[in-house]
Image 1 (cartoon, rainbow, N blue to C red):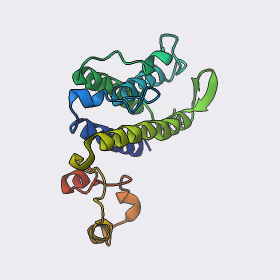
Image 2 (image 1 turned 90 degrees about the vertical axis):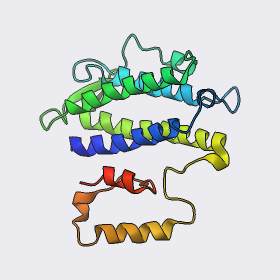
Image 3 (image 1 turned 45 degrees about the vertical axis):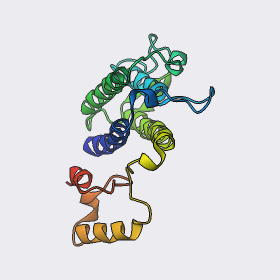
Length: 196
């Protein structure tokens, strides 16, 4: 189970990583309007959530007293590198926590704002939360880059070709053991990363 979680989250992290590669410093801080978040602010929220939720997650409430959630929506970064460093810090904390999950504690109780959750449910909450925000990051980047955007999914008008390629690739294999990430990128080297 843990390996499947890690695989899924690594895929979603890779979407963020490949998005950041396409952006300049200034583009990381672009906002559509005053009520919208920049990519930098979304990263600040995501990493802040990860650090709070997953630091000592088996023994402490996931909403830490030192977390300032409201402050996560105020930009304090000045460079793209600062944003990327915080992104990596959050993911490192999260993946370290996932590594501590085992069959004995998968259904043990952890708390978020005092509410009891089985560990598996706490992970599933984030499997909904993190891709939600990563989708926002990708969408903002696509608006910024416009025709210069390099797709992270199946290229437009290439679905049938992609489906044929995937069916050929996996024909005769046990599909349960080759569970692929949602929305493979239309890139052989990325697909190879997720082979089992």
